[in-house]
Length: 369
Ligand SMILES: NC(=O)c1ccc[n+]([C@@H]2O[C@H](COP(=O)([O-])OP(=O)(O)OC[C@H]3O[C@@H](n4cnc5c(N)ncnc54)[C@H](OP(=O)(O)O)[C@@H]3O)[C@@H](O)[C@H]2O)c1
Image 1 (cartoon, rainbow, N blue to C red):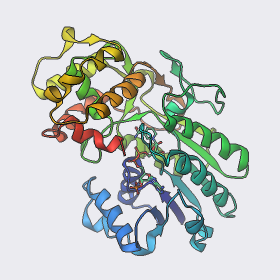
Image 2 (image 1 turned 120 degrees about the vertical axis):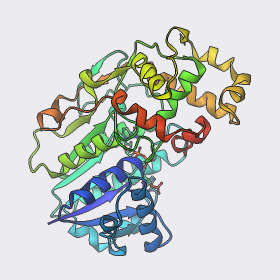
Image 3 (image 1 turned 90 degrees about the vertical axis):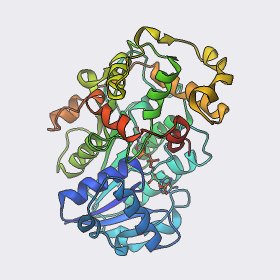
């Protein structure tokens, strides 16, 4: 029987992975890393997140206080001395500061704490797999490209945000300093919504598309493509990578790839159909960030009460990613037996439905922690 140490289960991807594992009813002993004052509070935090996935009570009751490992990756020494860690056979490491903002903990958690965790796990004799969740964007991709998985990173690569730099650095450090770690890296592309629940588990990133269409202008062209997957597909792929006894590779994209990526024009049409409105279409203009800056005074009229500085910062950061027009090859994970991912536009109506009544500033809070 597996003893699984899961991190990040109060978050979007880790929550979806835990829901999938609990629902599959696989024989797993869970040890779940949570930040909390005490074990009961930790369990309550996990339960609250599972409820966002509509998990039923009987399934939820499988988790008990014994499954909780209290700990914080910014101060890992304490939880790393817990002797239960010596019995762990599998790790799924979803925890990270996943923010495009200037969170001062990005480096401490995503690099220093994660490295200490990996080094500790490398000493666990029975450990069979350490599945680390990276990000496809950590390779600082060339605009317009179809990116293949590679363990090599360009030293001089320019990162748009500190977050992707931290994610690229930790992958390299784990490889260098933990050669005995049974490391497999999953690199999801852009995770938006859930195929049935839309943005109920998290409104992360969905607001960017709504924001651009409300502005009728943004930094990308409507012809640009974007590689988006739903969180439930991502969770299915993570569980597959966890359970496969042998893997031919140690880096896997979890992505839409060339076939299932969509253009911003497709997204415009699908959102319009869900809202029963005409698409923005020809009224849309591709503009520079400077042009968006000049709209500063109109932002409150368009979006309601908002922090103008934060809105502009969001436009600059997410606009730069939207302009990349990259897709991430998903050949390897498809070869492993994963079905093709659904297109973003196939389930976008659920995302629209689940964010009705929420303003853009309310939806974007999750991405600026
Ligand atoms: N979302 C995407 O589009 C996407 C795409 C590619 C890759 N990824 C990767 O997927 C992983 C999860 O991202 P997400 O979108 O699920 O983010 P998220 O919703 O913000 O969840 C982050 C998780 O990490 C935990 N965490 C943060 N700081 C911690 C600390 N100091 N100690 C222990 N746990 C800590 C959080 O716990 P608290 O609840 O206590 O804060 C939460 O459970 C990240 O590694 C991210 O790089 C995400």
